[in-house]
Length: 609
Image (cartoon, rainbow, N blue to C red; front, side):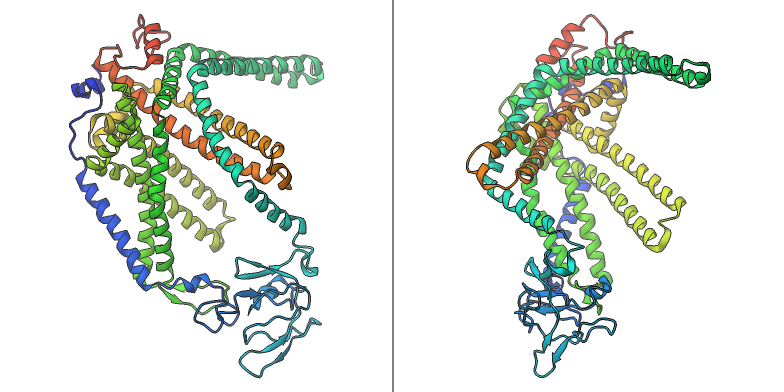
C-alpha cells in the first residue's frame, strides 16, 4: 500500500470534506495584524505627507511650477530656454523656468516667473538674454522655440522646431497622436472585440473538448515526420555535395549528425510507447476541464472579481506610498523632480509597504486558486452545475476555515519574490558602482537569479497543489503540501504528461484566441461604419484588440489550467478510494478507464512507472 493511499481519508469517498476546522490559525493572526499595520501606516502617511512636493516640477531656482497657494500657481509649465542647446544637451537641461503657457512659435513672447538663473548665455554662443530686473516679475528676452504642453506640466520641443529636427521625428510624434485618436474613435469596436474574445475563448474550449486528442497526435506525428525528413535531407546533402574524397570529413560529420537524429527519433518513439497511457489520461483530463468550464462558466468571473476587490486596495496602497514618500525632508538640489531625505521611521514604513504588497498580491492569487480548486472539487464529486452555489461555498470555506493556510502559502511565495527584488537591487547597486564589466560578478548575479527563479517556480507549484489538497481534504498547509508532493511523486509521469501537454495547448490557445480575435476586430473596423471612414490607420486599434484578446485568453487558460490540475488530483483520490475504479469521473475519464480497464496502472509496457 502506497504512502498516499494510507493517508487518504474515507471522508473523501463522497467528495470534498464537508466538516472542516480552522487551519494555521497563527498565520491567520499574523496576516490580519500585518494587514491592519499596512492600513495604519498608510493613514499616518496621509496625515504627514505632502504629495505636492513630488507632483509639481521644479525650476532651476527651486520654485515649483503651478503649485497651488504659491506665487507660481499661474505658471504651470516648466520650460527649458534654448540658450546653449546647440553646444550640449546638458546646457539645455541645466536652466529651467516656469511659464504661463508654452511658446507656440519661434521668438514668441511669453510670461515667466522670476528665476535667478535665467541669465546671459555662455560666452561661446552668440545668443543673449536681455533682462529687466525691476519688479517682482522679470522681463526677459530669451530665444524661444516651438513647444507643446505635455500633461499640463512641461513644455517639450515641437518636432517641427528648427532646434530638434535631428532628434525628434515629426511623423513619429504626430503618428502617436493619430494612433491615440484612432483608438479613441474605436472604443465601441473595442467593447465588441471584448465580447468576441470571450466567444472565441469558449469556442476554443469546445474544440479542446472534441479535438484535443486529434490535434495532439497529429502534432506529434508531424514533429516526428519533420525530424525524420531533416535526417534524410542531411544524408542526401552528404552524398550529393560532399561525396568526393577531398570532402570526406564533412561527409562523415553529416552522416554522424543524421545517425544522431535517427536515434533521437527512435528514443522519442520509445518514450511515446511507454507514455501512451499517460498521454491518453492527460487528454481525458483536458477534455474534462473543458466540460467543467462549459458546465460552470461563472467560474471565469472568480479572478475578475478578485482583481476588482483587490484593485481598490492597490489604489489605496499607491496613494499611501506617495504620501509616505513625500513625508520626508526636501533635499536641496538641481533636479526637475523632488529629492526627498527620509528618517529611519519613514524609510522603514516604505519598506514595510513594499513587502506588504507582495504578500497581499500572493494572497490574492492563493484565494483565487483555492476558490477555483474547491469549485472544481464540488463539481467533480457531485456534478452540481450550480456555479454560483459552488463558488459561494468555496469562498466561504476559504475565509471561514483556511485563511491561515492560504496566508502561510502566500507568505512563502512573497518571501521568495522579496529575495528576487533584493537581488535585483544589489545587482543594480553593483553595476552603478562600476562592476558591470566584471564577468565574475555578472555571471554570479545571473546564476543566483536563475536559482531563485527555479525556486520560485517550485514554491508556486507546491502552493498550487497544496491549495487543491486543502480544498479536497481541509488539512493545514504543511500536511496538504506533503500529501500533494507525495501524490505527485507517486504519479510523476501522469503529472509530467499533463503538465507538458497542458503547457502546449495553453500556448496554442493564447495564440489562437489572440490571432482570431484580432483578425475579426481588424475586419470590423476596416469594413463597417462608422470606423472605416473615421480612422487613419487600423494598426493601433488592432494592437489594442490583440492586447485585450491576449488578456482574456490568459484569464480563460489560467482557470482552465487550475481546473485540469484539480481534476487529476480528484481523479487519483477517486481511483484510490474505489480501488482503481472511478465512481465520479466525468465522461472522458470514464471512457479512458473503460479503454484501459484490463490493464493495471503499474503493468509493463504502456503503463509502467
